[in-house]
Length: 351
Image (cartoon, rainbow, N blue to C red; front, side, top):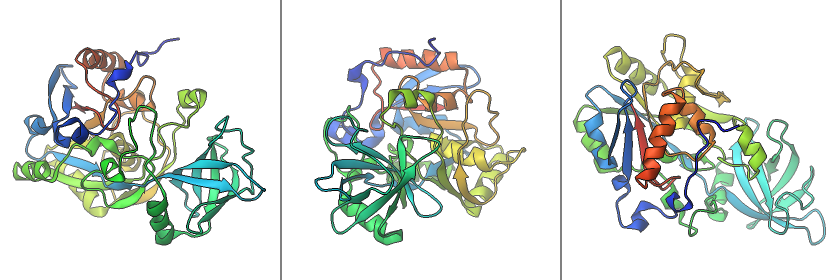
């Protein structure tokens, strides 16, 4: 049965390359603005976002840095074992990792994936496959032969950014980073903040619009399985909210400012730590929070986000801010006006 989030996205509206490769600055993408109170829709350009912000507003960013989370390895526990793409999904508290294993030949999941399999990468890095994940069965738990900063260094040397079929070329990792990213850990770019430049951030600061940062290491947006993706399983993602950020949020809201999340990852982190009154405190943990139209927002007043494909779980999250029919109407208008989708595409501001 069709849902409000069933719509047709023409293939030509997928951003195939970064804005810089389309001849514009990263802050010159288009911006679809939706007023939560009136439902009014406006169309503008991202570098004019200051027209919709006011003094005492607080922009909240996810400073997680994107990993080149696609690694190539081969099964070395058998002679002439198959080779595969290992897409890292998330680091677990015991320093193991969940990963999507995609075989290079034939069925992506049909090359004898099993527990105890040994995967050999370049530069002496290896991993043992421990078990299939119980919650998301397309993922496998791995333990690498090294850990900590040494493993992260190897991932940055050996890996490539995860690339979906609509992307026209294997763009360098720098294109998949926000300018303010500091903490390595995201499998895919927390892309809502990609359009910000240091100049724009400085201009907003001069206008009395403050900024603060959380960290939430984003997982995979697709498990390469249409049936599983349609179930929208909520990934368990690690987050950090500092005492400084918590204090800024509480103070801004007490002074009549709005807490505006830059990305759905920020919404998940903050709504996971806010108490019943909307106050936030310092916290580090893992969240599996699923936000939809039944969720009453506690501390986030507005959202800057990308444009999400049909049936995406992010659209469920948007329905905590706006009725689903209103989101669909805005999206239909965006399609008519040739907005472009995905991580290198245009943006949507909901206030």
